[in-house]
Length: 358
Ligand SMILES: Nc1nc2c(ncn2[C@@H]2O[C@H](COP(=O)(O)OP(=O)(O)OP(=O)(O)O)[C@@H](O)[C@H]2O)c(=O)[nH]1
Ligand SMILES: [Mg+2]
Image (spheres, helix red, strand yellow):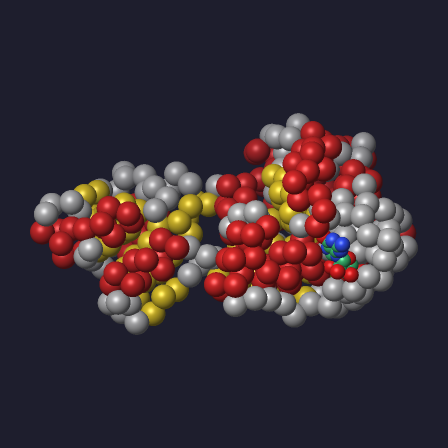
């Protein structure tokens, strides 16, 4: 399950975004630090392909992929020195897969705080760098000492030192020149700026048509390092309260496209190199998440480790082709199921059946 942690200034719209994605449950209010204890919520990853296959197979169970959202308190300049709520609450999102920046670009006299997204971004980046520096300083001396006896730690200590130098310049690791290998070595330290970033630029209701323009300064700053999504979080949160058909109507009427949840999930899947394959039958239809470039046995392992260990072959067909044919049996009958071996690279939208023996 992918986990997302929200970071941003007070009143940026983090809890509103939480409500837009998780369907409600968080207090969104026009005063700073409305959120003190984190909100944690889950959502099913919408997938019309899965829904269609489940209908085709008359599946008793439909299992979507899921994701988890963590909405935490607002971060302010000086949080590392204890300003506002301080920054200890950031520890609550150390283990998420993706950090979501919520950057305010909406103007509203009833909601205090700046509405320049670049100003928000600067504070967020600085405070996350400072939090990471503190994490490194708490680990480095001890690790350094250990590495004199245990040579396997030498590379990690060197990476921590290099990260320290970068952060000290005020550069978050995701915007640094540290290579993929270094970044990998830093994983055990759970540094916040070592995680992929998705920036939601929260534009006002009246700025929907100029959303890209409003987000442009953020795009320019983060280009090549992060995904940027302009969005009117307030409207998305309102849409999320509606029943499905009414929600569709509202999204259409306002030109909001597919809505917040699919947009955020797709952007994150893109960022993280995640893909989806499907399985379908009368018992269950299910969406499974895998790493882009993974071969059939690794995907089989996503279902169960036995399927990877005892992998023989996979029967494969694209979801839309299967849907057109109307059933797995029909696809087999007309010879449209491909038989693929252990070198087959699974593609997004493949429907699989794994043959295995253990
Ligand atoms: N006009 C307008 N108001 C918004 C928008 N997004 C959020 N708000 C309002 O701004 C206020 C703050 O939103 P929250 O979602 O509570 O902000 P937050 O980032 O969670 O704030 P803290 O928990 O205090 O850190 C609420 O009153 C929201 O209704 C928007 O796109 N337009
Ligand atoms: Mg909040």
